[in-house]
Amino acid sequence: MASRLNPYISFSGDARPAMEFYQSVLGGDLRVSGYGEFGSEAPPGYEDKVMHGMLETPDGFTLMGADVPPGMEHTPGNNFAVSLSGDDADRLRGYWEGLSAGGTVSVPLEKQMWGDVFGMCTDKFGITWMVNIGTQG
Image 1 (spheres, rainbow, N blue to C red):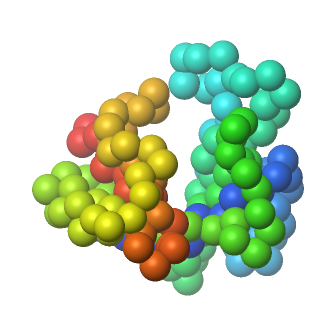
Image 2: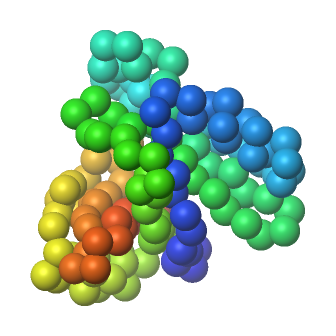
């Protein structure tokens, strides 16, 4: 799979209806994973919340979104990030190194409970980036 770049929107508890709305407008295939679906307990109050949603449309748009996890602030207007994902680990690690240089790392680039390597940082210009290296299956 080639690397992809797309918006990632954070929601304050209403990610599922929002992503379903975008699907109703844009069409396509929506996949939603909830907190607790990866072999761990969902944080209290997050049993029905979205950990990751991805809409892929017939026009080639990809939109991702999730409910803000416990401990992270939801700020309307600043509730999006740019997501880089794929399975070319070397290329994506290079992007991570460049984007995080001089910025702030909020989630180190490391293996996560869903099996992929993931990290999140804010670059030196204040833009939030998420890098996900998929496991090759």
